Image (cartoon, one colour):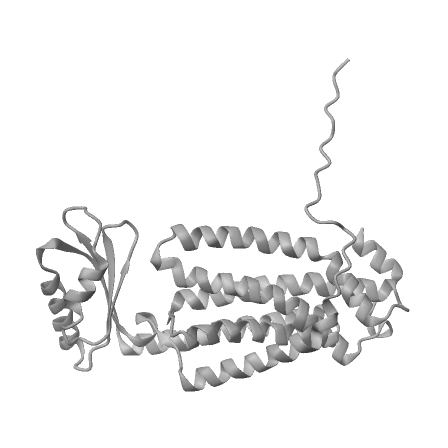
Length: 320
């Protein structure tokens, strides 16, 4: 007789019957988040963003040590700091002997830009060899800023349209505010610390929007199912129940995403550092907003089971 292999049933990382009272402090968390959003808007108008070469124009030089030895970044900064060519940003790129140098747009036009690049290469001497040059003019950088902004706005509008048709309007309002919160807080942090903001950060913001709306939709779907099923349950209790029922999924998804992002942050080099940092902040902020912004909006508007489409039978089939 063939020996039967026992079926692997898996194991649970988290208990299924958690009863954490998330809604106990929802008012403090929600209004703190609103104040944070206002503060981020003020930061954007007062401090602005530290645009990279992509958005403000300039030249990117990739150089490499001839000897193959690791580049001395601090020594290069000392060599280039007194050239009088404006802001010069130096960072490791790829291998230890590769360096990326960013020169800001020079006021004298293309001739001055070329002269500044020659100054930099002359100051580095024969120890480094030029590998690549990329020039972004003012017109191109302005166009990139505009299209980057349009891309983020269009993504938000597309998500709003989806959620508005997928859920009742109370859920849609909560999702909209949560998404705007996530983008504003990440951009506000970049403004506060004057971290470089380039096309990579725009890509990170678009990814954050997708992650955040996915997390919010999962929780919202469970809330709607429970509204159909437990018609007499108090709303605050029902919100806590729904968040607890999806807590294992939320934590595991967030944890696995953070593990990958931390690997990129540590081993991906400085080129991916700001992109990865924006993603890390977005994952944490997006998880928070799904619980303490999207769900409390339902408490504020007082959604009722009578306003939710479907029935107990639909809810049961959706959960099966």
